[in-house]
Image 1: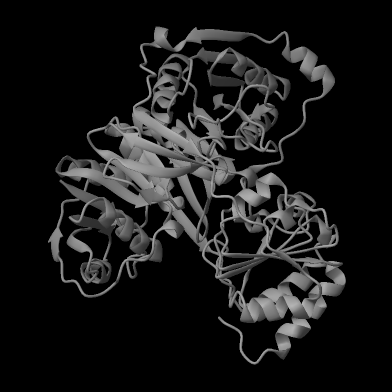
Image 2: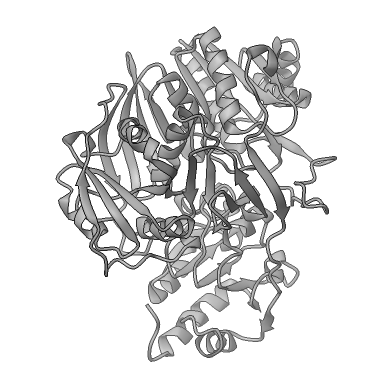
Amino acid sequence: MSVLLIAEHNNKEVKPFTLNAISAASQINEDVHVLVLGSNSDSVAKSISECSNVKKVIHINNELYENYLAENYTSAIIKLSGDYSHIICSANTFGKNLMPRIAALLDVSQISDITKVISEDTFIRPIYAGNAFATVKSNDKIKCVTIRPTSFDSAPSSGGSAEIQNGEPGDATELSKFIKKEEIKSDRPELGTARVVVSGGRGMQSGENFKLITAVADKLNAAIGASRAAVDAGYITNDHQVGQTGKVVVPDLYIAVGISGAIQHLAGMKESKVIVAINKDGEAPIFSIADYGLEADLFDALPKFLEELNKLNTIQK
Amino acid sequence: MKILVAVKRVIDYNVQIRVKEDGSGIVTDNVKMSTNPPDDNAIEEAVKIKEAGKATEVVAISVGEEKAQETVRKALAVGADRGILVKAEGTVEPLAVSKILQKIVEKEKPDLVFMGKQAIDDDCNQTGQMLAALLNWPQATFASKIEIKEKSLEVIREIDEGLETIEVNMPAIVTCDLRLNEPRYASLPNIMKAKKKPIEQINASDLGVDTKPRIDQIKVEEPPKRKAGIKVASVEELVQKLKNEAKVI
């Protein structure tokens, strides 16, 4: 049987995590069908049909789907579900909101946030914020699975020419209504997907001092993170929080400044490729996982760090 | 208006968890347990709504072993009026929890059901949405602001791109994000008072819900250990290493 993948998009463009989900889906079964629920969303269906891993696109084009509501999506997906062995989407706020609603109606015990496909019914998923990994096997007839986008490479977005089939809309919900979306506009990369993250902790001592972090982040085109201690102290808003109760990040470079390394913070960043710790306490637990540790007062080290970066001829973006 | 709040007993977020040597799970004996953090936000919000005169009763419910009573008791100490404990042994998957909650909702007939967006032990993030589906109620997940209107709620949701506002008709399910509010601490007099508040105990089996896990947990492993790296002596050395050795800048 085939895999049904639910695309995330804004009616014009495909959201990048959909490509990561396509790549996970094709590891489960090569017959990947992608469902596009949208309004005036022909360009989305077309661009997905060009992905070489996609065998078929089902496009349901209806004003019902102008905005994403899990209630509306679910009805359409349930109607198609009988033809599939797996229903898949990414484990971001889009998929987390949607998949359990589908799974419950199919009486399926969902498997959330997988980081690895072992076979078509067995997967690895992090528990306790990545402090342990569970290998789990689904025994349900249809498997409802969400995938952690950062654990799978993006599938190629070209080289294919899948058939686009038009589908029938599901029932319209009267239970909920979309009102508005305010996208946070920032020149900075998003914390969850940034190549470099510079984070500050309680050691920053004030919100004002975060400007030292900002300056380094500007130079490195980095996202700004923070520990829970810094958020609780009111230095920075909690959309910057990295950790078990915040965001899990996997950048190429993570720079922890004035962060001691509480368990719950480490859970959110220890998969980063390269970790740098700057802390004046040489015994801080953060040093036990840092690739490069600098035992120094951050108020001396950060300006110097910026100065050294400024001397470099090129900096990767 | 009546609000039902679901709370889960989990290993405290400050505890470094340990994987059992035989790979069968996580060590929970003699480990500090607490309320799942976003469930504290759910209780806080319900209590605030009651304090504002917009709700008449807040009922806290937990599903789990006998000891989950402590978690219900804690909710009573911060302002819930009464508690329900549905007893079930072993792992209860979110699908089974939502079926249990469905039975309780049918009996209690709340106007709103609140719970945390996700439990920090299994990290499933499913129960609220599943309950909404089973009841055919609307869902407002990742709520960071809730405004009560006459027959509906306006909810601001934290989504990856920023914030989304939706309106859901009541009855509704809301799953709470950490930014929703600042949970209060229980005062000593309120802890004492909570001891007198009633907690009804029900067996999951008496509700006719099969709680046997559907998913086989084959093994649990620790993540690969990260080796400590080196200490650098100066900022200059750090930048040089990042540029030429790690090649990340």
